Image 1 (cartoon, rainbow, N blue to C red):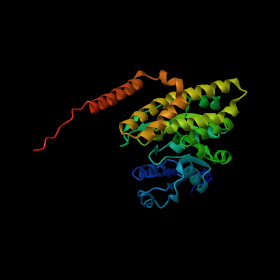
Image 2: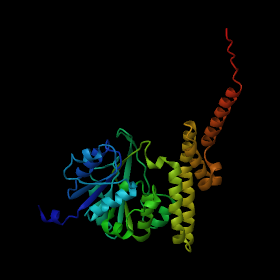
Image 3: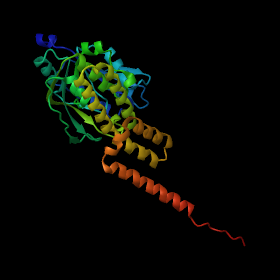
Image 4: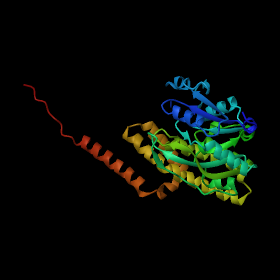
Length: 326
């Protein structure tokens, strides 16, 4: 081993997994196939009931941890505590890193040595791994916390590499903010540490029905909590107050329509309790902005009510069949 390899920092990739064994090999292999070689991979089995343990056993170099189900925040924190890397990446079990991801992040750190974390770009892939698209945000040079309050310009946590000291100081992910604990952590990090951004594609985010971002009711509640936490922090700074207000509107508009879709999906399946929960979330967190959503969402609701009315009307006016005994 040459001297510069001995001095190279260890990079940890932490992969929480809950019942996603079918995707896990791609995640693990994307970490081990990095062009940067000084790596450790930690898989946290968060109480899975599938064959996650069996899958991990195929990779003897992977550090495997099993725990009772504690959610994504708890699994990430457990993986971090078990890791030793000077730099840390959090990779979800259904996603993948690109081959040069670690190399690109470390190059960005080298150019911006004051940064506490660096952010790259992602591509989106479908359930079968085929390419969907490439969301892109402009590279920010300053006011990272303020801009992050307005809109989450970090495409996904899988696009971020942290210095270990940053996660240690922050105390890890906050489970009470689930399923928005990654955004809350990024806000804390951006407020306390400088960051740097680059346009290298470092990860592939898999879109499928189980994505947390498609669970509108839960995301509305979680984002509301995250933005409430920011309130005492921004008070007294007019720029941050305006940024937070803009962010509150952004998240309402982002997950309001998703919650409406959930609401009607629950109604179609006669899941009354879940539908009521979605309706309450809309009334409490979205309120008057419901009327600003595209007509398509309101049109779907009216169509649903019409169908229910016709069904009820047909039942009430169904002719009575009389059975005559002989």
